[in-house]
Length: 119
Image (cartoon, rainbow, N blue to C red; front, side):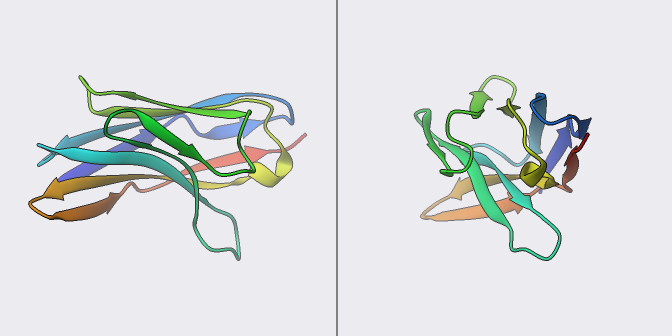
């Protein structure tokens, strides 16, 4: 089994910053990717940022230049630094990881952490 423990969400004013953390543990011998998704009320879950083995990062257009994803391979932790937050960034943020098991990449999700951007 794989456990993903997220932290760092909260309430912040527009223009503010938050840093999300997600620590992976368990059967994680070969992590292929780690990333962050968001889900706002009434909307589908969507990708914000993902970092793939080899440190190649992908970002959604809506967060480019504002969010930075990084990964600590030693501690199996992924971070999302979120700057210049906007009210439309309000959502539950989910950590996601893909574990390579043979030819399959098996996906796992964290429990989610609420981010609210409001004055």
